[in-house]
Amino acid sequence: MTLPRHVFGVDVAGGWIDVFDTANGRSDRIFNDDIGSFVSRLPGDAFVVFEATGGHERLLMETLAAADIAHARVNPRQAREFARATGRLAKTDRVDARALAEMGAALAPRPAARPDPARTRLGELVGRRDAIVAAITAETHRLAMARDGFVRRDIGRMLAVLKARRARLEKEIAAHVRAEETLAREAARLRTAPGVGPTIAAILLARLPELGQLDRRAIASLAGLAPHACDSGLRRGRRHVWGGRPDVRRALYLAAFVATRRHPALKAARERLEAAGKPAKVAILAIARKLLTILNAMIRDQRDFA
Image (cartoon, rainbow, N blue to C red):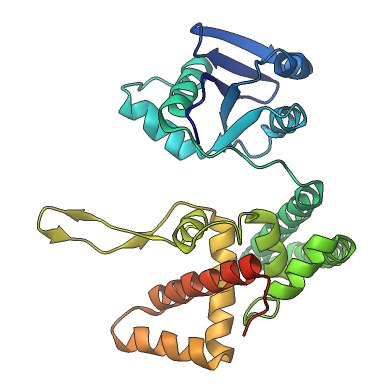
């Protein structure tokens, strides 16, 4: 993209935002009730940069999208590393807002696409299911540790409730996907691939909307499946996957694990990797990356798995 002329850095808190304006070097604190007024005053060439904060940024993002103001939501780790690279070791809301503005001006991150309400709702449903699954896992671990009869019965009742909630959420996710034409079409296409069931298809649709829009290297990086070098001088370190979107990486790892048991070509590819000395997890990650490349091409070319 062309470097934006007027960049605003925004640090998002629970009840307010701190804004740094690169044009005049001014910092302001704006409470959530006034975000709409703040966005309405932004110039047409504004580019707003803020961090992903686990949902607190949603109001700002939705208001910017409604006003057609260019904006980018960046990884907090990358933003912090940029701040350290520029010599800012202190961390306050105003310091962070300024660092985000400078990061936007220097790196010109990719602007966010206009949000799709259907995918937004799917993301909320998938997120709630993830929370319920995490609670089921935690309660299952507690049950394994518990010895008192009353406690074990109480945990058992809680697990029954949580599993019923999970089933209800999965039913709602399926109904929502069926009701939305684009989601239904893409989910059906993804499910033709080995290892991809309704839950994994929903996670990919909600958490990786860029699927089919980027090349294989960019989509692998977004999913956290791109191997990163760790070399220095003559030393050649082991490549590792890191960063990206961990929920997408977990879903693709599970899909690859299942696919390498059921699909002959992918099973053979895993066996070749393991025969070459690759640990099982490394081999499955490699197959997950291969599977992602296939899924990306399927959505891009609008074709089912061959």
